[in-house]
Image (cartoon, rainbow, N blue to C red; front, side):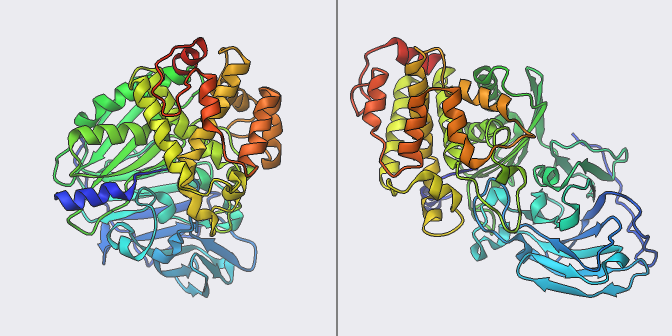
Length: 519
């Protein structure tokens, strides 16, 4: 996840401001419900039917054998590090048997519903309100939110609409969406429905479904391929100020550079960027930034942003999200592998998930010639300054493991500042000890081979594993400055690379410095 500072929003407020035709689908008759025989969880949505700015969701579960069952909408989703309670946007949840009779439902807390006589359950239905036009009532980060703009735009972060039965978290999902003529759904998922009136997507389990956002709007997209990776850029611009064609050149340049930087690390075959541009003059999204997924990122930006600034923000934000394919999407703890959406246990290693990702998002730009060394050092200097304003003695691992509660959550933004600087220092130590032959990217490649997408690590084992794959000095640094409470002496680490002036104005060259920034 990458947030844009709210000061940017304040500045804006002060200064002012090729799809085929589709047929409307027929509505299924409610008088002839069918009992589910499938081994998947089936979900149906119809974007043609919007009532009071809400969409209906129908969920058909597999056969249930227990007396009761519980259906939940997420409280928290991966990558957000906040308590959002998406169940608060669900209204009028009802459960039915195969004859259309209602079953007893008990609403528990904000996000869960217990259904009695579960063996007779044929389906549940409920209405979902979106988050964008009521952002003044909650703190959900806009790229993790939802939008319902009838006939114009539907931003479906699936975790905001679709929940799970606790016994079917590992069961395949089948999502069918009917949509208005003229709207097209951009996503990394593959539409398995041959008709032009609906889309059908299948995933292996709930966790895969919630990692695949969909944006329906008038078709405005580009596609291109980089070293075997298909890229889709989809844009929704309410006034048409921006188009995908305008956004794509900078995105393509950036992603080519990222792929060159990563080398053979990434094996993702498709990656989708969903860009939602918000109208600040209306009740609309106000939180700018992006949320990562394994094969996609959702981005929210103000439409009034000038073209040059839009390009700069997109470069920084999307590059950060793209590098999440390294961590936590490939390298992660068991808390992430088996994420509990309503009682999450957070990993202690945000320094790696967000910090190393943010470091890569800056390092690759100087490495690939997109920014100068002076600009890179200026960014690092700014991170030192910002980190100094935070609690510099709070152990980073302690903050990370408790990030959902105060006082730790107040320090979350430090993952983009001190977290990135931690990644930088680890990189410098490895460079120094290997005479410039290795760095933190090499470490992440080794960790990915040790673990990987389907194999998680134990939180308590990570530092020892990193030490084994690198040098004792790296382990000492992590234990002293990441799990310990001592502030990092940044000047000493920059000095190792020949940058002896703490203000980063030194122009002296060194082999290690060149290897650090250019190899």
